[in-house]
Image 1 (tube, rainbow, N blue to C red):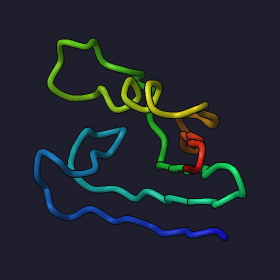
Image 2 (image 1 turned 30 degrees about the horizontal axis):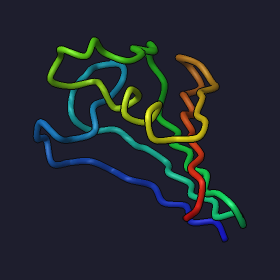
Image 3 (image 1 turned 45 degrees about the horizontal axis):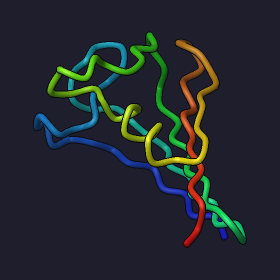
Length: 94
């Protein structure tokens, strides 16, 4: 089973999707979820821009990848500033 959705953010709140290039609210993400027999795989593709990486643990935001690293059985990224980034993770099904 594959679920794919495209998320557009127009809320403009602190919890919104931030455009990687301008850091302003807005932009487009494509999220794809694949259910396999023993795991799920989630991929998020964005519009590109510089890769910021994980923030230090004492910052109030930007720690999502640190959380993913602790919970997922594996994760990674591919792509680039121009074509966009694909960040993915896999979790074992219970």
